[in-house]
Image 1 (cartoon, rainbow, N blue to C red):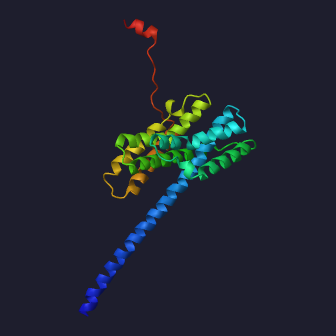
Image 2 (cartoon, rainbow, N blue to C red; image 1 turned 135 degrees about the horizontal axis):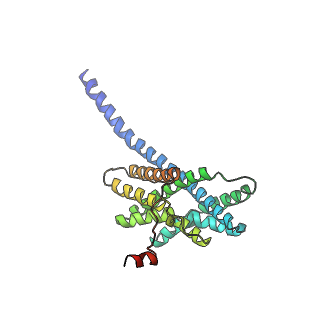
Image 3 (cartoon, one colour; image 1 turned 45 degrees about the vertical axis):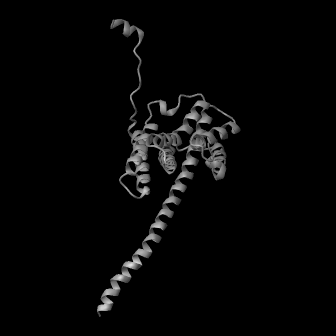
Length: 241
């Protein structure tokens, strides 16, 4: 009887300890797969927003695909070049295929139906959140300092849109009152802080995605924007002399 009492708790504990690493491993595998799926979804959405920008300027099919490509993978490309890392779409060409297919589909789809802009804005917010977390994660893995991590996160999330707007001759979205790069900055900052409080980095990634997505959605729904810089006119300055 005594042996049973001793052996039973021992066997339960050893079984749990042998099972726990496998469970944790499976959770991390599922988490990585989820992030990868959201990353591909964000790539598709960014490609579509690039195509819509090209359609406003009435570019041809080739020009539209180029703008879609730059929007979808431009931020990550710039990040990898600055960090002196292999460019992600060179080792994973699936991103190129996805952008081309999404751009071609949307190019012909838009000729017959109107794109669901509000829904695309929500998906774009999710894409920004995921790209921000991925950019921060990559810089963290390289052991870079906190300011560089935050800059890398913003670059990954917003630089593609900046290049897109410059190529189509518009003032970049992040410079036009929109809470876009600001949301990315806040999310990346939260992720940096969270890594000091939580042992599992997955928690920090989730917090980053939630913060960026929530701030961006809040800005879309409430139409809230940052204050605009209004320079003092010469006439006003003369009056104050």
